[in-house]
Image (cartoon, rainbow, N blue to C red; front, side):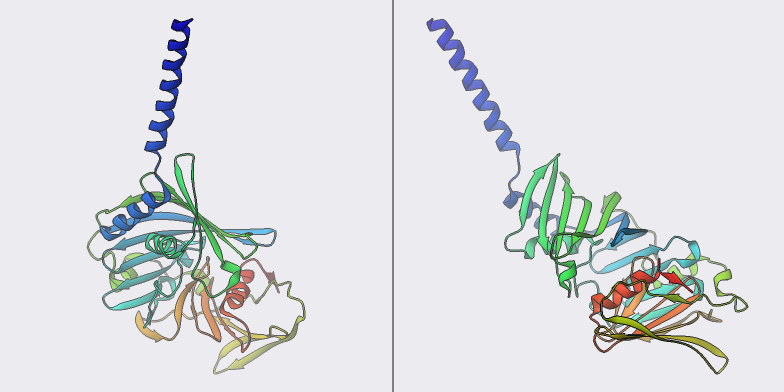
Length: 336
């Protein structure tokens, strides 16, 4: 009997040791946060590809981006709207912030605090900053991954929360952006994430990036092609289509679309012009990622180019989030 008791005691002691060792090997929230702080302090750069899915009601739209970062403040984001001729870039270097549309030979320069003026769901430092700035983030360890649910730094409650999934090496795997009711608005998946890679010379040079695109004059900019007018695909109560008008001025045809009601706005569409030579144009506002294009946003306007059309949206009462929602709805919207 004593032998049985001793054997049972030894077994129980072994089991307890196994639990203790397992617990010791599991990092706490504080451990992971300290590791993230150290990782970002020593970060020299990274490179990754991201797949972004935007949820608009029952519809989903998928886009891709290539992201490069080099310490201390160099960025290059290549946004793929689905066609080579629709690729755009955001570049930040010592010269400033630039939005490039190689197909149109257009380059815009911004005096902007981008990307530090709000959360950026595809930038590693932004995700870490949001984790560190949230006083009470939710944390769990799941399937050998660390999962943080935090508040965001967007100017809208519709992008209020985010779930950030990191692997054991603290590389980002997935991000979910959610509204105030925890409904998913944007899904981001990261592929082939590499810390501290080698970059080719000129990677973050705006002029070299424009030249390296080597995109031939696209058929989408053919001036003989009839402009396709796209209307927003919205389900806003108390906001109705009030005017669709074709205006010709200085041989330039523009289509003016007005919506009136609780959330009124005016949308102007015109055919994109391909510049004879690449030149830099100063732009006000901030660059904004629309998923399928990069736009320029201010408190009262949003402009962007896509598939051979220039869009300009102006409103006195739409928020920036609502203007972005209008633009997003038009990529899958009602075509006239």
